[in-house]
Length: 412
Image (cartoon, rainbow, N blue to C red; front, side, top):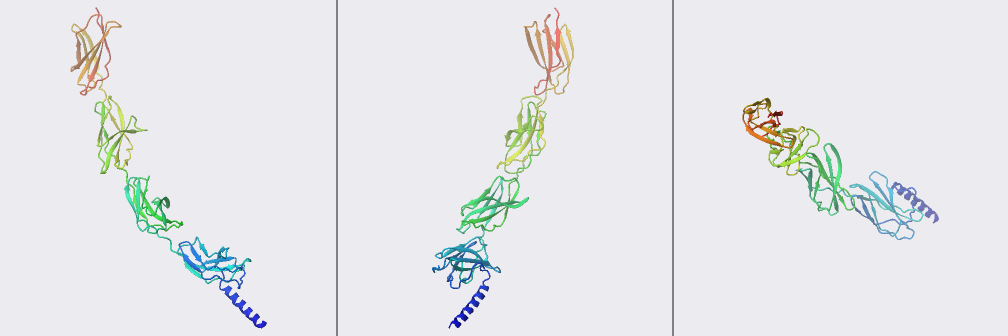
């Protein structure tokens, strides 16, 4: 009887060793104890990056807990978890690859680390990576911004949307925003460059942190600035004012034009006025004043064209040249002053006379609208000093600087 028992035990060990050979991934540190109960009735539920296990717990007092082994196709199974309570019946294997087939086995172990024969192999495939949004559109021609809209994701597991952007000169994708709430379906990307192309795509993230593959890529461009103002001109022949004119911009949504003005041809220049049309009258109020101008176009979205590289110079009409005194004579008829015209703009003259009888007694007389090149002063008194200056006057009434002074002393 004992002989038959030994033969049976040897046969069992041969079968046991051959069985171990069929499961090469089991840990060599654990000794197989064929008397330990196996794990039966294992049920699994696969997710995208995890697999949930449920089994009938083994309440045998010799069992301390469970070993879980995992492998992929063509690879050995490796121990990936130790479940340290025999009363446990659930476990989740996490951080797996989406859309991947895995093979699992479970065994029980005792307080010495010996383990039972493994369970039957369980084959399970994780779910594919969640899809991104099915529709995305980027709206172009907005001022320094792009509006992105998409169709809300139908999966209630989606927590938020990840907005990614790239550019032609910088093709690397960068996360620029996270939009909360699955039902939100819009994002406006602001503070962008003018007339610039951008590319966008969207990923979705679930409540358990799973990120989808990217959506299709959409392209958009920002609104360009208005074109630079052309044909800018400034007058140089008008009295006490400078008139600017320029060509209208071709853009249909121009709101106004900014007039920049400076007393210098270079350096800092500031906005002086805003006008709706293509003409501006700068009332200077002085003669012979220089001003330097640049004009920009501003559209209804506040986009402003670039300024001209070189400003346009305008001047108010300078004073005419003073007449040149030719002669001064004292005659029986009075003091005769003659001069020569030195500026073709002169249409009349002014003579200013100062009469000085003493230091404290000075009188002034002004004679205007003199059309000839001479003046006779008949109202003179002996013993009085007279000082005369002559001025040219142009058709706009601009008065020149005074001529040289003429002093006349009438002796008693």
